[in-house]
Length: 470
Figure 1 (cartoon, rainbow, N blue to C red):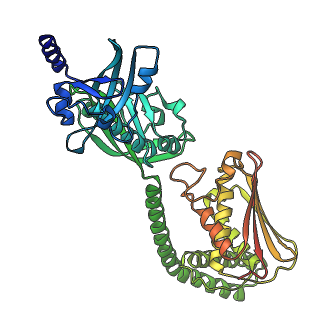
Figure 2: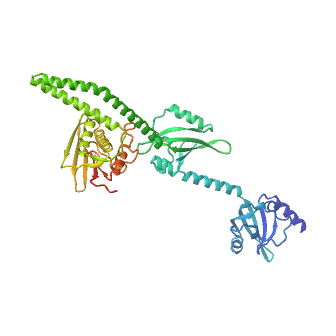
Figure 3: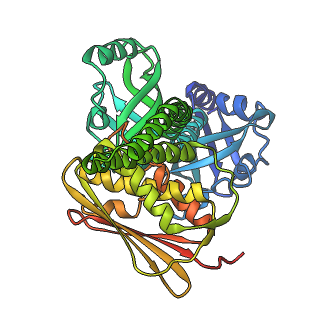
């Protein structure tokens, strides 16, 4: 019998997993070499080791359930107290064995600590990827998307159902050559990382600028099985750069306007003086009439140049009594000179006496010019009209600027006035004009209201109170 027990111990020690023989009272009667190594057990069981004492406090305790069950085998999980305080995660295979007048449990505990660690690492990684603010996409080895995180859906405007299984070129702007992408593909397909800036296109057609890092995903054999693309949205940064360049261009235009005023002003003064002399010295009525027309056009040119110089000067931000009617008419005269406005007719209707308002004149002029120019752009070079109605209310002045242009899509109405949002093609608008205008009007405690319908034109109504509340 002793020989049989020794042979049994030899065989149980050959098993690579921990093995235990446990009584119905949960006392450990035998265990193998692997259990001694992982748990620091003595060479020979003392008989007073309780199986549950080998487990950590929060571990499942499945033995009693097996003893009470009608079936003789069950799988479960348990967490053992390992050497040096380490925790050993295991999967248990428990088998009930009936002996003379008693029952035993034969327990095999397979160490899955490394697998659990990998699962935990994978869970942490997946949570980081899923909840990061940076757009992330994962593709298979052929380049088909198998995963996108919520940030990628938000930035592109596509849902994951629209993206999974598709090639990433679904968001391509089409601005890069086949040679460009061939070089990218050649680099990542051999396991190297590629990074750079690219311009993509959102579902609504707007531009999406990102800094991209594409990392190959390799298996244990160093074979590329997929790719992870990490994006950082720099669209706003790009738009700010464009706005900075636009501001610098406007500053240059202001300097140029001041130079033109100086260089053109002197010849105009000479022309005006000569015309006045001729008007006083000739008696031909026809000639006098034509000279009068010349003089009026000289005054008109002088006024336009002066208005341009005034508009280009930095604001002094000082409130002063301002004639809204004069500001509107001056803004109309400036906009009428634009090449795009040659087919547009302007009409200004002042309903009643309008009092002076406490405003910053150049700022309110900027608002009128921005809205009038938007109206001109809405004509797209075709014939049309812009009506400006200035009307006095009980507590405010209302300036309604209506154009007969293309109107605005209902989907875009809610976004009008947001910074950097524009319905114009790239390079033809910064998306800041209306946002700045709205901020100016709000600073005067007023409001801008919008009414538009696709194909039926647009009306902006500016409301300025007589007595703004502090």
